[in-house]
Length: 160
Image 1 (tube, one colour):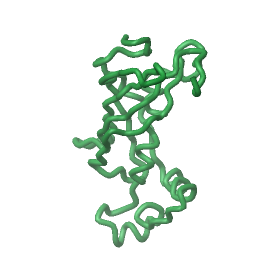
Image 2 (cartoon, helix red, strand yellow):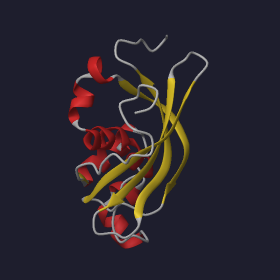
Image 3 (cartoon, one colour):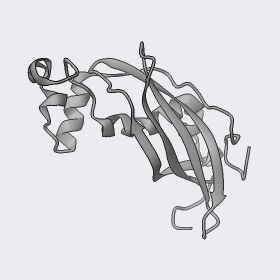
Image 4 (cartoon, helix red, strand yellow):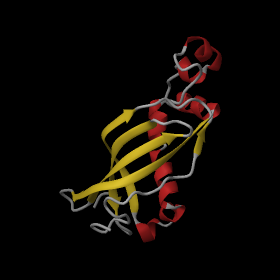
C-alpha cells in the first residue's frame, strides 16, 4: 500500500459483482437527471429508431455506477467501516471514454487499478484509479477511464 491508502498502487481491485441495469433503473436515472431522451426511456421508439435496436443506459449512468462497483470490487467492509478504512470522495475524472453502449437489462462489472497517488496542498491523498467497466457477453468494454478520488484517512474531516 502507498501513502496510507487501503490499496496497493498497480494492483488490480476486482472484478466487482455483476450489476444489471434494468429499464426501470434507466427510466429513474432519466427522471432524476431531467433527461427524457427516448433512446433511453422509450423501448418502442428505440426499437424503431435507435441504431442500437433498443434502449440503452445513459453514459453518465454507467459512470455513476463506479462508486458502487468499486465498493463491490474492494469488499463491502471498506464501505461499511470508514472509521477503519477511511473514505474515498469523488474528485473528478482525468479522462473517460464510453466505448460500448449498455443495452437495457445488461449486466456490467468493473475492475479498478490504483495508478498513482499524490498529496494535494492540504496534505490529503489524491488517488487515480484506472477503471474498466465491462458488459457481460461483450468483447469491448463499456467504459474506460481515469477516475480521481480524494482519500480521507480514518477520522479525518473533509475540510481538513
